[in-house]
Length: 134
Figure 1 (spheres, helix red, strand yellow):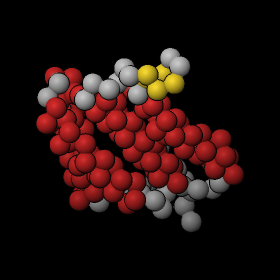
Figure 2 (cartoon, rainbow, N blue to C red):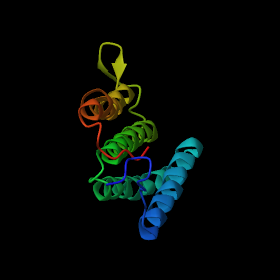
Figure 3 (tube, rainbow, N blue to C red):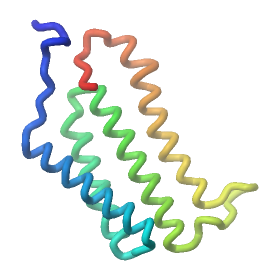
């Protein structure tokens, strides 16, 4: 078997098209958030999140890809929740102490960080032979 230097990670064109479409949806979601275009921003949440989940599922055979793509899912979820909290004006309502509803977005953001910490701190050092796609 060839060493990691010679192995290629190939993305089928239909997957690449989906990834590119994902970027379009994500940009429209964030532009809508920036411009406070609630209907467009809300409409872009599901396609952006669903495609991120599909991308993570399709790359599940490579732990490096899976963990990074799951972190992206967490990021989009956190980002979408934050946007919704601002659109529906409950972002600054207190939840506990000095923490507001917007601050709850730290939970999925932290989940993404924990997934990456698992990969870099635990999985990667124990699986040096695994193909890495980054």
